[in-house]
Image 1 (spheres, rainbow, N blue to C red):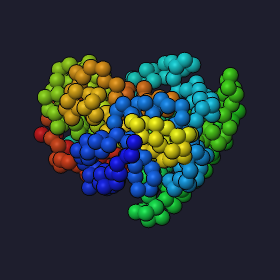
Image 2: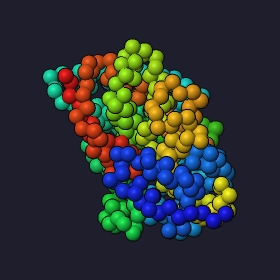
Image 3: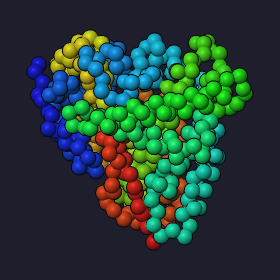
Image 4: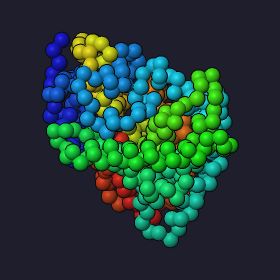
Length: 404
């Protein structure tokens, strides 16, 4: 079956002018579930096709399987396991999970709940006397960054340094050689190199020393799969640090924005605190922090929705579009925390299901519950708020509210 080109729709989605509301464009994109692009790549936008290909063993996350060179900054560094295929992916993910969750450290996430609550309440205490609050700068950013620094063993006072690096790395994720200045890619490459050197220096201090942080544990652990190399530990720390900066910040900010736009649901959450669990799941469907997986590759020819995608083709996965697909979700453009069978794509699917999902869920549940409970009459100042540049990791760069 011949696919239909949809370059104009995709270009509009990637353009910053569409960042505040890309969802009508996703609906337009879904008319062609598998769209062939001008550059020979493919875009997949419907739920059924997305879930199918995310579980397809012929889909590769390894840049080396692309038929043409990858221009993005991550092509210039040692890949983390999110950009590897089995068996390397499985081994590294098992090694990392030994220190991050079940079965070896089952209480890590839940055991942090008192600390998370204390951090959140401390940040909200600092709102006192302020008429205007930026939910991003004053709350959604410092909270998960404090948590990920604690988990990894990164000194919190070094945060301003790696904040600059992370911003440059994220900005380079959607680099396109035809439309973006080369400086965008170069800055991303340099930032990755700087962050690698920084994390490598921290890691050197951990070898042969006891400690409870993840860097120390990974540096000194000899499990059934052996021990990670220093390069593998640093690439894993890269992944966790960037996720701790961006995805949870966006999820919390998107969540507060959504609640302010739905005051009846905000009040209901005040009255029914247990609603927070399904509410965050619906948030992951309705306003997820990760909208796009910018590339995957085909190991061999793959047939998706009667379209043959040739071996080596670049494949872009529009996760946020799939989570708004009316063929899978009833009334998908409605925020409904009572939604049943909510198998969203907010954390992806398949073997690359988000490594930090349990922590992100708990952080967001803790953050939104406290904000709703303690802010009596929050008022959104600007709607839509200004958005970050990235169409991949999407969220407001500021979210100003007033306390009336």
